[in-house]
Length: 150
Ligand code: RB5
Image (cartoon, rainbow, N blue to C red; front, side, top):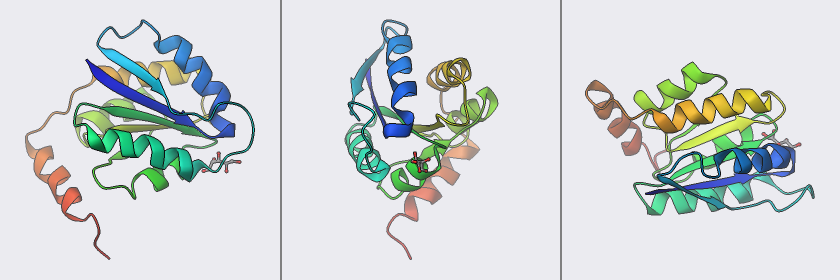
C-alpha cells in the first residue's frame, strides 16, 4: 500500500475536500493523509508544499497532491525540495506523461483552472500510470543530479 499525502492552500481547499471524498475507498492500494489546510482561512502555499514534499521525500513509495489557485506556486515550491518531482498538469494526457516520462511523485492542480470532474480524471490517470523507465530513467537521474546546484 502506498501513501498519498494531499495538501492545499485556501484557494485549493474546496477542491482538496472534494478529492478527499472522491479518493476515499476508490483506490484500494492507496492510504490518503490530509496535510491541510484545515479550512478557508488564508495560508501561504509554500508551507503546505514543504509539508507534503517532506513526507513524500521520506518514502520512495509515497506520492503527493498539492492544490493552489493555479498549481504554479505549489509546483515551484515543491520542486525546491530534494527528491521531489512535482508536475503541474492540466489534463489526463499531461497527467499520464508526467508519470510515464518524468516519474512525477507530486501532482499539482489548479483549483481556479480545473473543474472538479477534470481533476478527478487527472488524479485517476496519474495514480494509474507507472513510470516507463528505459530512456526516461537517465533523464530523471540527470534531474536528480541538479539538486542543490546553482
Ligand atoms: C492564492 O491567492 C494564490 O496565489 C495561490 O493559491 C496560488 O495560485 C499561487 O500560485
